[in-house]
Length: 267
Length: 289
Image (cartoon, rainbow over all chains, first blue to last red; front, side, top):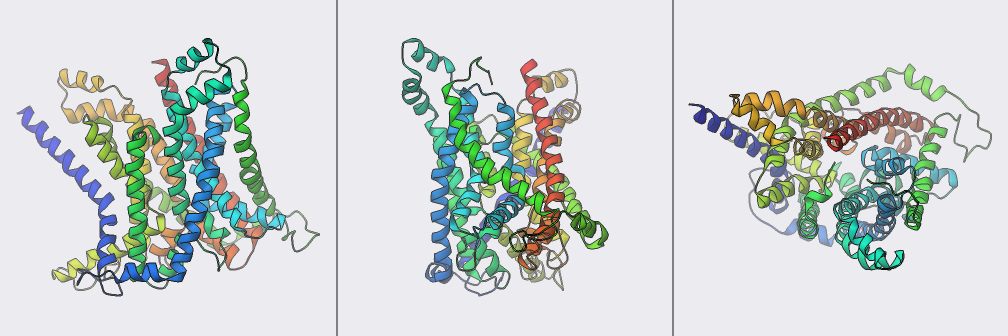
């Protein structure tokens, strides 16, 4: 009797979780349907298969210009966020600094603070300083939200590895710099690389900060998509969305192979 | 984190990030707060004075109070729904024994999280709009004569927001549930409790800090959403972030935008401090055990 009840509960548990997973993933799959459906408005069920929306997306100067800007900004963000984020993570984990807790909270703050406020604040400061809205401001704004990811993945690897390896190298006479380059750096490398991949996708997807820092002639892909969606919902949006979804999937798989998603996603 | 007695030269590596965050994060937020108490834009007019009139305007106009209220309401409903959907998934994730299964489930949670907000909102438009998947299917089957109003209202906004923020709830909860010793539940069952009762009386109470932390996180994220309420809410939903951007884009009133921003910032900071406090206590409790 009890065994039967337990298995019924077990089944309900799995069905509920299956339904929640479906809720989470189905919307991403639905986008693919609309990216391939030939009608120029939302229509379901689909009436055929076409690649014209992908062609429209890749042929549009507006989409391609913004895709290029997004990729350029993301590339710059990867370099900047990885350098300062990984360095700061090392300092916090190994430096014996006073105020480590405060600094960690500060560097992780952009994750939870409304990004729209980070954008507004940056915009106001740039106005006050008379800088306007230069492209480097986009890089700076995105770096603020990318650094927490780099820090977290690096800190995760740092806290997992055995400090005695470093101590052993030091006790065998290696100077601190040599210990750093020959022991610490190779061990934390996967965490740093995972962090830089996160930095890329965070910058590529970033919207609220960009909203304040773009100019009409220089918009990132999410901003162009948003403005397009206010007036038109044809398949070009779905095609552009597919590009973004496939990129996210690739990122998840690569990070899992590199360090394991588990280590990088502790909240 | 163990603290060595001496500050090592490695500590200097914090300098670039520290400087960057000082210049581009702390100072700008200071500027925002400053703008909110100035009588005008100091870039255009050199002789500005301190004033509280932007805050007075906010308190005096029911539009702003109502939008703050509606922002908080959408945040609360989103949080509750995200908790209901997130808990079972987090429990499954935390208790999954197979390594491969765990990795796949984690990918399924994180992949949507790394897809842009604009893209995910578009996905929900294709599902919930009048010609979208749900309405087209139901009318096609003859179950509906007119499409259901699933979007351009608070319902559509909340559905899309839940989808966007559920992964944050799952990851926070899974972290806390994963730390609960499974043997406690097994002990309860060996003493005769049903699995349901063992869960309700052992695991659920022990996961309360996770519930609290996850809810604070999702609430903080949901009240700052801009894209989703804008596109899913039609003209029906007006949230604080939408008003903030409107002040900059439509009227270029940086001072008033700053005042609205300070209010949203204050709410967020309270939530973040509470979140860190709750998770800090979980971590300490584990250190002592």
